Image (cartoon, rainbow, N blue to C red; front, side):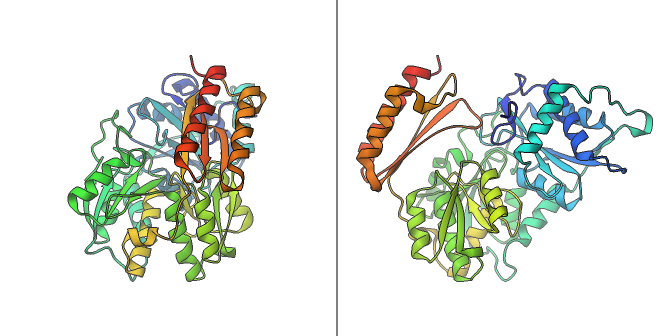
Length: 452
């Protein structure tokens, strides 16, 4: 079992264990030791971050730790997580580090790693990093003189990433005549995202592009799609695009302000790829959180779905193992493996816009491909993460609800990998019924392990 790493790196309240400068330095030292791999040359690790205030202290600690092991650091400043993955692989660096807590509030932060090929680390490598920190094995390794690492700043990183993104959009198409409301969540994409869409010809109405260190994800971005919904109606825009703090996910709104989530975007893009014979093995990879309506939509188009545990890293793992090229999550993480190695909100929006242009249809017309079953998601804060089925009355309630739903719905209970939350998801034909049952399950959970 991993102790530090969750489903998406190490995460927590900044300046509280494990998200401290001391731990950041240790993570930097351990990662540098592993990624050097005994090869006799200068080694380089890319570091980027989002716009959180705590990013400065954690970045400096990571740089110190990495340089103390004789590895150079390439600092790119605020840049989306997928941009750091791209810079890492394109510059032939040994690894990449992202300082971000994604969609969490500003007081949280996180540290996640990419290997040289731009993919997130597998569990076994994260366990090796943890063991190095626990064992103190590398404490005595202290390069000196010219063997100490040096930090460099890559001034054109944003420009490189903008060019890369534009090259993923079909050369024969552009965005001229489109009006886009764009919410960057006061996060890592506040500069690059508007530039990409504008340079492709769109009229961009920007929101969430004035970060101050504390307003990242603050009632904006993909976790607050109401912002773009209202803005689309106000400005009579063609589409609203909302990114999260590190821009690895996206939620959009159609021209009427209706939310279009990751499941709908995947249905639209997968059906387009099926038509053009580009969806490998006619298969989409999704997670257990995706709505059953997505399964139905793909079957009608002649495709199929395989499902993984929640977390984009598990989606990518299944895609790589199975030879698939499109996958993602309902939350808006989507991976177009023909273009990038991780979820990329800007790129996902570009692929959706390309379908709109190619088909000559509005987003509302395209979204009709999928009719979702009513779905309810309730979160309950917990003080500990125990096997939920070991709590007798909670288990009995879950089995009772499953029996009532039968084949026309489902119950999914899981803990968050990044927060002290239990997530209760129900799907069924009757929204009132499943809402009532979800609340009853959550109430029983709070009674036993709820946060005090």
